[in-house]
Image (cartoon, rainbow, N blue to C red):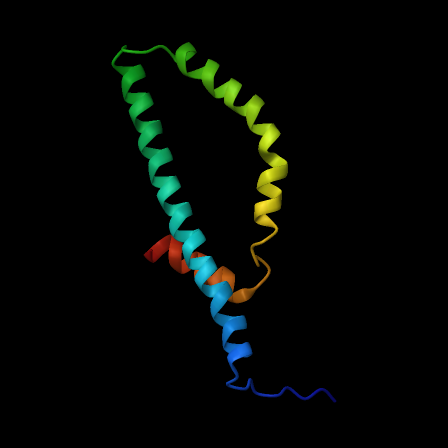
Length: 102
């Protein structure tokens, strides 16, 4: 028989809960900001294309070159993502709260 003990009120237990929650909130808030900027840039580019001020070829070239050079940054992104406790339930809760309410 497995018995579950209630959590104690120690500083270590509280830190183990609060640190991932705060990190998740910060990451969610940053992700929301990046998403807003990306949507605004996309709408602006589409508006400029519709108005005939720029052509789609002027956008496709830099985007393709960005994806080609972006692959060199994958190791750095993986290293930074390795620091995040994304398997923690409190991190996920903080991420969701930060994205929708932050």
